[in-house]
Image 1 (cartoon, helix red, strand yellow):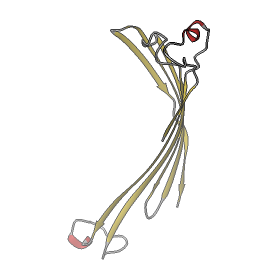
Image 2 (tube, rainbow, N blue to C red):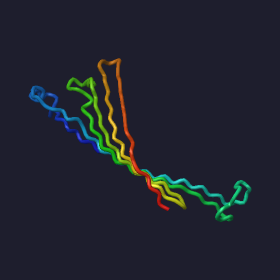
Image 3 (cartoon, one colour):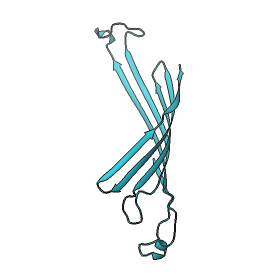
Image 4 (cartoon, helix red, strand yellow):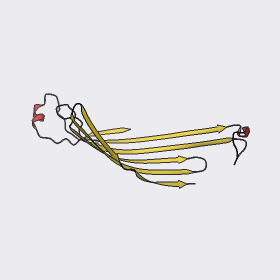
Length: 148
């Protein structure tokens, strides 16, 4: 799910010449993104005594192993407008993001949680049509917990 909020003012119509003469501040746009993903992987072997396994630790009549990974991501980002009033790319484009990510990994014996906070920033320089330079950086910090 992604929501956009445009913070800049725009002319009401293409013939609005009064708008073009006024000074106005373009504040860019805010974007909020939400992602949810759940992935389950199952491994089932109805014949664990086939000789493939060296040691059978729990049940010798059925092998069932699965893992579930659940991921929830919230992200808020801001960027200045990509295009100028002349409908051309801006010479300088700036972006800032903050992402919060929750990941849970569990199987039949354990459950691990990871919570990460990821601030990031990007800058793009586009002085003329044949040159486009971009730099991007982020920092990941977080905690992990284990529940049995």
